[in-house]
Image 1 (cartoon, rainbow, N blue to C red):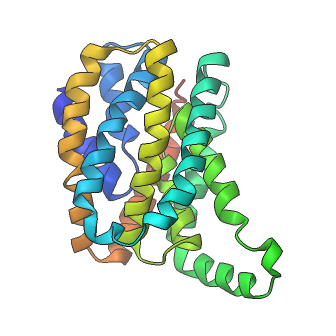
Image 2 (image 1 turned 180 degrees about the vertical axis):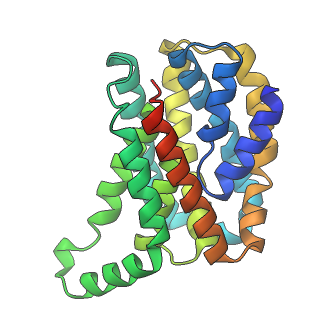
Length: 248
């Protein structure tokens, strides 16, 4: 069951950004407590990183300098989020998370308009105040990604479409690399200090790797507008679900 859930989670996660919508409930259904399921899910997510990288070679070509600049910031945020998870009471962000996911989903749906506004606003500012949205937005979403992560892919995808690349396929590939770096650092922390269920990590991670090699290929083939609306609507559904039944 976990391997099948991993394949589906890896596919939809690397094609949009709602991996935990599938993988986290699957771990709960397998009998893991909430904290262990959250930690185990974050560790298994690392498997999406190499799979997405292999499948996204056309979109990542020439993106090395950009990734070298922003991957460390994403990793730092993931580390901070994982330490927050291990050191704060369970559920401390439970009531805030649905609103964060909803905002990210709505931003994704409004991306063409927001991107145009952002570019116009940037042209009207001085050099010293440019580029603030991406670093601040990335560190915030990466901290959340390390803490819980449900819907973080939608938030980061919307952020990148507005600030980094108007191409959905390229922004999605960059999003997968950023999430992968944060997940790797978080997994290192959880492996050392968290209640990881390694018996669950193995099948879930293998499934996620397989699914992650398919997601970017789907993004490449589907119309960008259709995919943006699919991911945005799924994100809103996730926000409603998390509001009705908070996790953590």
